[in-house]
Length: 485
Image (tube, helix red, strand yellow):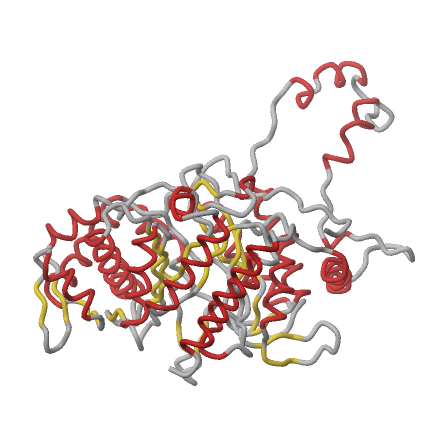
């Protein structure tokens, strides 16, 4: 272990949540989703999924693989999806209770390029980068769980398993992987079982969850949905994520895009609940746009509504929400654009009520990682978190006796109450690091120094050697079995 101690997780704990959409609006979107599921249908590219759905009364077209789900079947299946559950962690103090009313944040994912911390040059990401970023996630209190922030680009077709191996070796927090494919999911469950200490303990406190992407519009590909079925059978929570893009993979309206997204997420959840009633499931809609002048993918035009609606819809369907609120289209760390886009969405995200919030760390629309940008984003997260924290109203905080001591026209600086409270009353951001020459240091320089400190000195609590060896063995099996396929 390093000399640096891991701080406690600091989730968002707001005094109130903002309800931005009425029950009438949410019901209208729900009805539209049910109409799409029953009339248009969703394509499932998995024979296993088609068999399950047909066996429970769905209308399956074997030639097109399109499944139409009657509304009553959808409603019955969704009634089994739990609204609350716990995501476990290597360190039980880092477990995430998704029924606590708190919002737990993490990084963006899954970048393919990195600004090398030593050279400053951009290059493809590697498994070693996954390990380094995992240590940063472990060390930063605003990051409550792990995503593969960057990809193990040097590990080929089994990269997703190498990523979670690097994650478990470098953080004690909950891992949410992006493992796809039935066999890869089986091996990921073996890895999670080794970390958790057995299948029953994994089911009780799942130390792994998995993000399963849909294919807009209205498709579940074979690798994704069969991985979801494997995870559901093992009690590993699944987060279905849809990324409808206005005007290309979804209608060019936010309402229509959310209907597409909900139809994909709900149909996937229906499948899991029919196969494994009570399987823990989460929903995420990550709306995006294209630049109509160039066709380029973008996330943050001036009008970027929709994050709060995704959260409200997940809750309306009775499952926890994992809504990405952040990231930026900015190309470099420390820019006005990056700060504005992350600050706006983090402040709104702090009030929306989503349980999980992937949020910071990547530039260039989720493609490029910068350690300095992660530190600056964590600072913005802390500003958002503190902005909605409750104000303590105890006797010491009200300080009526102190006010009486000082009286009209007096001064509080010399009072013992100020000496004991002033330091804790003022929390300094990276914009207020003192410069020995006077004033404050440039925030980007402060962020670089903090990243250097953590990358140089911080190490997470290690896994037991036998678990390290077991994870390596399973990954080696994956490499032998799957690398040539």
